[in-house]
Image (cartoon, rainbow over all chains, first blue to last red; front, top):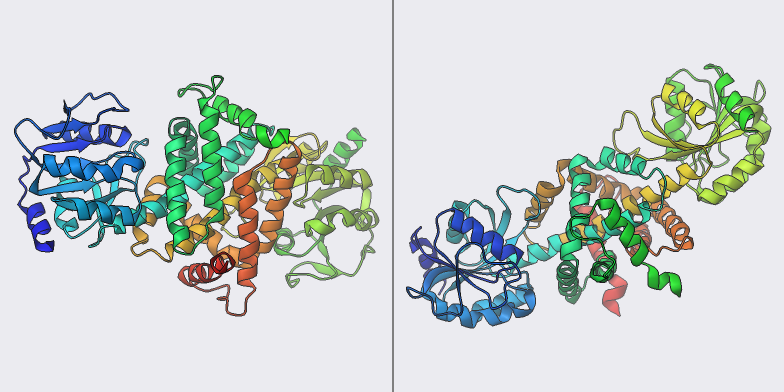
Length: 297
Length: 297
């Protein structure tokens, strides 16, 4: 089985056709990048969150020209466990599936156990909202080293995390603990800052200690929270649950889950500023909505 | 009164003698810097946390040569309100007190009301643990502009926050909400990372998004937490209480207070690594101690 997966990954031709399952922000990014590199890409998503602008949309696992050699699964975590049956029908037995889902290490292993093709555990360790030319990935699994060459070809910066499926997923969750909690902290800070005269002096001091790159990223987190608050809150919740099951008890991260959940509600309000609104307008809305419940009790 | 304070600050001679009240990490830093610039400095602290290596230690407000024209109050927040009676005896009525304490805006105002000399509210918006050549300050109060010139002479980077005592203090608390919560998040992250193989890949990804300056500061926060956890936890608690009284309810920061408190306990244990220990040893100790209670219930 190990040897088969590695052999499959190394024997794949650069002209293999691809299937991307799931067309949210990651799926649409990947489809566009593969297509731009000249790959032939099918897209399967019964209800795509992002309109399909690249690749060829299909309605099920019966692909024109028969099964593909390469596939990516990048769906919401809640449905990741249902993708193997699509992939087993749409990908050749000697093909490779890149499981790009943000799910727990144990679910990654259960997905692998149900897949006929080989599987590589892929974790995106980067923000696709920034302008990263070579998004950073961690991969793990028996065929990780061979499969990483394929991802490097498509312009990713790839680190092999280990030979076991689940090791890349653990890194993703560790990163989420930091980045999603930081996002919640940035929301709280921006909300409080909107009430303090001369708050720009504090921002300058943060930039002085943490660097201009960091304060720019704070702005990016606030702006993209408007779009991703709910998904990121659920991701952080899953990460906290996984580490807690191992005996840890991250409290800042647990509070951050709650803040991201409240933020998602705040953005869903009719009075919420739109996605392109100024950072000031976003922070001001958070201040008016985040602590309303606490203030009234 | 306003005119008097401003006149006092502008009329002071560059050769004025100084009194520094409180000799902890900030007081010792300030005494050393003033002395290095050729100022004559008295130090008053009945129980100095840092040994007095610069300036001339005194036992009470009766200073050799009579009252001084310039003084700094930089004591633990719990005793800041008791310093005015020392200062009223040790500082000339036409002198200026720099209140460098990290206390609430309202306590700053009460201190000013009890001082005979003029007072400037000073907030340190920088880390003295890093190697900042010109530490950043915010100042506020009637004489802030005139007084800031004196601080600039001594190598500080000074921003005037406003003309009311308390405005600089509010900026300090806003900064604390972010920086002390970030510190707690860094502790949690380092603790969890110590259990994950290949965690250095995640660190690289954080550096990729947030900059090398930021990840270096993460290390500084972990190392200095070993020394400052308790003080920073109390400072954050005060900041949370002040913003909460204004109707906000920062949850991430409130969780961070608890983490910093637990960290202070962890460092007080006999088995805790010493201050100069490696970051790995510090993180490992946090992992063994931070969640013990949670794990046993």
